Length: 114
Image 1 (tube, rainbow, N blue to C red):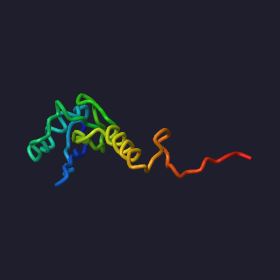
Image 2: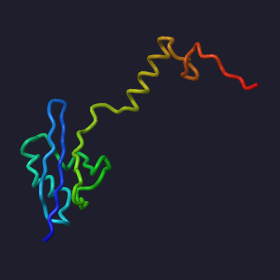
Image 3: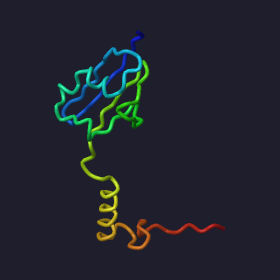
Image 4: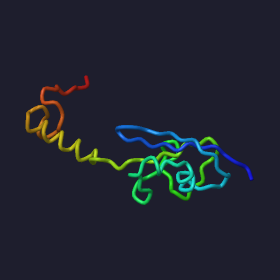
Protein backbone atom coordinates (compact mmCIF):
# COMPACT_ATOMS: atom_id res chain seq x y z
CA UNK A 1 0.00 0.00 0.00
CA UNK A 2 1.35 3.43 -0.95
CA UNK A 3 2.11 5.85 1.87
CA UNK A 4 1.93 9.63 1.98
CA UNK A 5 3.36 12.25 4.31
CA UNK A 6 1.12 15.03 5.58
CA UNK A 7 1.35 17.72 8.24
CA UNK A 8 -1.20 18.53 10.91
CA UNK A 9 -1.12 22.09 12.30
CA UNK A 10 -2.78 23.77 15.26
CA UNK A 11 -2.01 26.94 17.18
CA UNK A 12 -3.16 28.73 20.29
CA UNK A 13 -2.05 32.22 21.35
CA UNK A 14 0.53 30.55 23.60
CA UNK A 15 1.98 27.84 21.35
CA UNK A 16 1.74 26.10 18.01
CA UNK A 17 2.50 22.68 16.59
CA UNK A 18 3.04 21.30 13.12
CA UNK A 19 3.32 17.53 13.25
CA UNK A 20 4.34 15.28 10.38
CA UNK A 21 2.65 11.92 10.00
CA UNK A 22 2.95 9.12 7.47
CA UNK A 23 -0.35 7.46 6.54
CA UNK A 24 -1.69 5.19 3.82
CA UNK A 25 -3.09 6.84 0.71
CA UNK A 26 -6.85 7.24 1.01
CA UNK A 27 -6.75 8.00 4.74
CA UNK A 28 -9.32 10.65 5.67
CA UNK A 29 -8.59 13.96 7.41
CA UNK A 30 -10.01 12.85 10.77
CA UNK A 31 -7.80 9.73 10.89
CA UNK A 32 -4.74 11.77 9.91
CA UNK A 33 -5.42 14.17 12.78
CA UNK A 34 -5.88 11.31 15.24
CA UNK A 35 -2.71 9.52 14.12
CA UNK A 36 -0.63 12.69 14.31
CA UNK A 37 -0.93 12.78 18.12
CA UNK A 38 -1.98 16.42 18.13
CA UNK A 39 -5.17 15.64 20.07
CA UNK A 40 -3.03 14.47 22.99
CA UNK A 41 -0.91 17.66 22.89
CA UNK A 42 -3.91 19.99 22.72
CA UNK A 43 -6.75 18.55 24.77
CA UNK A 44 -8.96 21.58 23.97
CA UNK A 45 -9.43 20.44 20.34
CA UNK A 46 -12.98 19.27 19.65
CA UNK A 47 -13.29 17.99 16.09
CA UNK A 48 -17.08 17.92 16.39
CA UNK A 49 -17.14 21.72 16.86
CA UNK A 50 -13.97 23.07 15.26
CA UNK A 51 -13.49 23.52 11.54
CA UNK A 52 -10.58 22.01 9.65
CA UNK A 53 -8.94 22.82 6.36
CA UNK A 54 -6.23 21.80 3.93
CA UNK A 55 -3.86 24.63 2.99
CA UNK A 56 -6.26 27.30 4.37
CA UNK A 57 -9.27 25.94 2.46
CA UNK A 58 -12.09 24.57 4.63
CA UNK A 59 -12.73 20.86 4.22
CA UNK A 60 -14.67 18.04 5.86
CA UNK A 61 -13.30 15.40 8.18
CA UNK A 62 -14.02 12.67 5.63
CA UNK A 63 -12.03 14.38 2.84
CA UNK A 64 -8.88 12.66 1.63
CA UNK A 65 -5.69 14.73 1.70
CA UNK A 66 -2.89 14.22 -0.81
CA UNK A 67 0.77 13.61 -0.22
CA UNK A 68 2.42 16.78 1.08
CA UNK A 69 -0.81 18.45 2.25
CA UNK A 70 -1.07 20.36 5.50
CA UNK A 71 -4.24 19.81 7.54
CA UNK A 72 -5.09 22.79 9.74
CA UNK A 73 -7.38 22.77 12.75
CA UNK A 74 -9.02 26.15 13.29
CA UNK A 75 -9.89 27.66 16.66
CA UNK A 76 -13.35 29.21 17.02
CA UNK A 77 -13.55 32.98 16.65
CA UNK A 78 -13.64 34.90 19.92
CA UNK A 79 -15.81 37.64 18.42
CA UNK A 80 -17.70 38.17 15.18
CA UNK A 81 -15.59 40.47 12.93
CA UNK A 82 -18.69 42.04 11.34
CA UNK A 83 -20.13 42.94 14.74
CA UNK A 84 -16.82 44.49 15.82
CA UNK A 85 -16.58 46.63 12.65
CA UNK A 86 -20.18 47.78 13.05
CA UNK A 87 -19.60 48.73 16.69
CA UNK A 88 -16.42 50.64 15.77
CA UNK A 89 -18.26 52.53 12.99
CA UNK A 90 -21.11 53.49 15.35
CA UNK A 91 -18.60 54.77 17.89
CA UNK A 92 -16.86 56.85 15.20
CA UNK A 93 -20.20 58.42 14.24
CA UNK A 94 -21.00 59.25 17.88
CA UNK A 95 -17.55 60.78 18.41
CA UNK A 96 -17.84 62.88 15.24
CA UNK A 97 -15.04 61.08 13.43
CA UNK A 98 -17.49 59.85 10.77
CA UNK A 99 -20.43 61.39 8.94
CA UNK A 100 -23.67 60.30 10.59
CA UNK A 101 -25.34 59.55 7.24
CA UNK A 102 -22.61 58.21 4.96
CA UNK A 103 -20.16 56.89 7.53
CA UNK A 104 -17.34 58.61 5.62
CA UNK A 105 -14.95 61.18 7.01
CA UNK A 106 -16.84 64.35 7.87
CA UNK A 107 -14.18 66.66 6.42
CA UNK A 108 -13.77 64.79 3.12
CA UNK A 109 -14.61 66.96 0.14
CA UNK A 110 -16.58 65.45 -2.69
CA UNK A 111 -14.77 65.15 -5.95
CA UNK A 112 -16.51 66.51 -8.96
CA UNK A 113 -15.76 65.56 -12.50
CA UNK A 114 -14.98 68.35 -14.93
